[in-house]
Amino acid sequence: MHEFTWISAFLLGLMGAPHCAGMCGGIVAALSLNIQRPLEGSNNGLLTVLIYNMGRLSSYTIAGMLTGGISAIASHLLFVHQAQLAIKAAAVLFMLLLGLYISGWWSLLSRLETMGGRIWKRIEPLARKFIPIKTLPSAYLVGLVWGWLPCGLVYTGLIYSATAGGVLQGGLLMLFFGLGTLPAMLLMGAAGQQLQTLLQKIWLRQLAGLMVILMAIMMAYDLFMASG
Image (tube, rainbow, N blue to C red):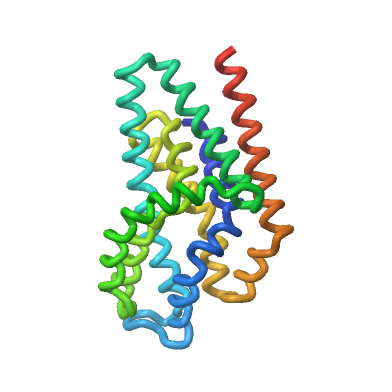
């Protein structure tokens, strides 16, 4: 997996900021209340938000390792070149659908989120055991569970990680994807409702959606050249 792939994964997470605001803004706002009421062993409430996000990124990395590993095994069992092209084509399709979803032009990915919600109903109670958050380890555990929240942005990142070629590569790709989402999540923790409102502006969502669509077109071009 080359450096450009890591950058692409980071940019995918970064461009998904408007979607992050809608999906995770509430939990981040709740955690940010600890700025006024620091946790035990913490002098800064923003540290709580950071630790929560470290848990979230851990889940993304684990999921990426699983996806990358399964994809690598499937590629060896099937015709390698054809399998790789099929996985990359799926990544292009998901990225295109994500761009349309973020921009508000077509919400097909929301149906996948609804399907994932059935599993989430079984997982989410685990996080509630640590809410309200009273310690930094609890913040990490909540983030670790919340990383499995049904999310079209994360699903796209996981399909992308399937193209990475292995367990380690898939985990690294999802880690870079998660790092791309980190600035928006931390800023929401600091700026709260003001930033969340800004990220939900139609023009900003459409701009971010267009950037993701452009990434999908670039990936489609690379795929076309590789299959030619």
